[in-house]
Image (cartoon, rainbow, N blue to C red; front, side, top):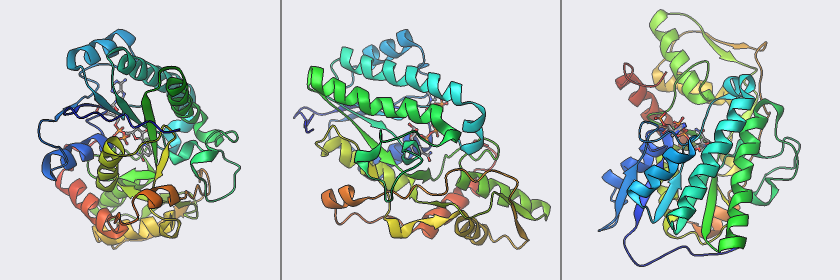
Length: 325
Ligand SMILES: NC(=O)c1ccc[n+]([C@@H]2O[C@H](COP(=O)([O-])OP(=O)(O)OC[C@H]3O[C@@H](n4cnc5c(N)ncnc54)[C@H](OP(=O)(O)O)[C@@H]3O)[C@@H](O)[C@H]2O)c1
C-alpha cells in the first residue's frame, strides 16, 4: 500500500511523547542537526500538555496546534518486568492513546502520521529473521501480550484508515532503543538503561554487578539519535502505509552478556559480574531483518554500538541527579 502523504506547504509537526527517550532524540536532531527545514514548525508534547488516554484532552490539543503531520510516540512503555506485572494496563492505556491520537489526527485533517510499533510485538513462535509482513502471524510472547496487541492494532488502524479515507498513516518498527533521556529504572526500565544504572550503583558501592537472567538472550539495539534521523526520513520520504523495521543488521545482534560487558567497559567498572538465573530471560531472541530499510537507504550509517553506549553512559553519569530512574 502506497500513499505519499506529502504536500508542498511547510509542515507543522506535532510529536506526541516528545519528552521521552525517542522524542528527546528527535528534538535534538531537529534543533541541533538542522533536521527542520525553513518555515517548518515542530511542537513537542508531554503528558503535561494533554493526557492522551483522555479523548477530549487529545482532540483539544490537536485543535490547538492544528498539525499537518504527526509523529506519534506517546505510549505506556516499560521493560520485561513491568510488562509482566501490568499487561492489562499496557493493553488498555495504549489502545486508548492510539485510538484518540489517530482519530484526532483525522478530525483536524493531518496529512501524514508516523506511529511507533516495536519488534517485541511480533509472534513469539516464528521464523527468523522477522520482517514487516509477519506482525499478525501468531500470538506475541506471554510476557508483554497487552502491549503487543495494543501496538498491533495501530497497523490495523492504519490499513483501515487508508482503505476508508486514503490517507498516509504509517508506522515504524524499531528494535530496542537506548540513549540519553531513557528511563534508567532498574525495576521498570528496559534492559540496557537498567544495566547502566545497576553498574553505576555497583561501582559506587564497591559491590558485584548482578545481571538479571542468564545473559544468553540476544537483542538488536538502536541508538535513539540514529532512530530520530530515520524518523525524519520516514516522515518526509517513506511512501508506504505498511510499516518499516528500523534496525541495525542481523549481524549486529548482541547477547545480554555482551551488552553487560560493554556497559562495564563504558563505565570502567572493575568489580565482579554475576548472573541471577532465577530471574526471567524473556524472549530468547527476536532477530529482525532490516532488508526493507536497506533497500530504501543503502548508505545509512548506524553509530557503532560501543560508541553510542559510551555516549549514553556519559550522559547518565553527567545527569544522574535529574535522569529518570
Ligand atoms: N524504548 C524502546 O526500547 C522502544 C522500542 C521500540 C519501540 N518503542 C516505542 O517508541 C515510542 C517512544 O518510546 P520511548 O522509549 O521514548 O518512551 P518513554 O521514554 O517512556 O516516553 C514516553 C512518552 O510518552 C508520553 N506519555 C506516556 N503516557 C502518556 C499519556 N497518557 N498522555 C500523553 N503522553 C504520554 C510521556 O510523557 P511524559 O514524559 O510527560 O510522561 C513520554 O513523552 C513508544 O511508542 C514505544 O512504544 C520504544
